[in-house]
Image (tube, rainbow, N blue to C red; front, side, top):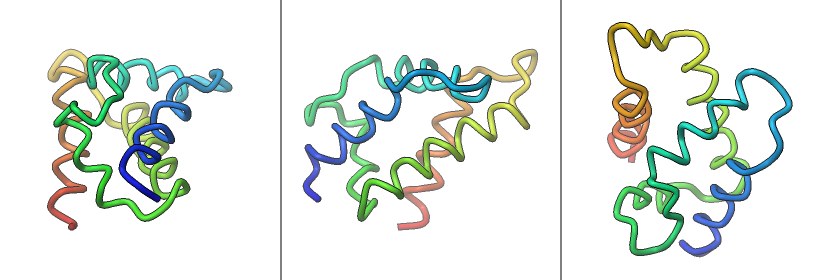
Length: 93
């Protein structure tokens, strides 16, 4: 799976119809990336660490699940919260 395919997978999954409350936060992830799903967007470089589509989808599901469970808009910004998951992925690599 090449880098463009990984970006396309992320974009497609984020744009899928919302099935539940958790999926509504996919929009926040799109906004975090400035809705820029191109190879020129340096914020997407973390996708290189994924090996397949299911890992990318699992990452999105993890982030949206954690937003529902732990995000507190009174004390933090959604962008910072999402950014922490990108940093964690980079540290794991």
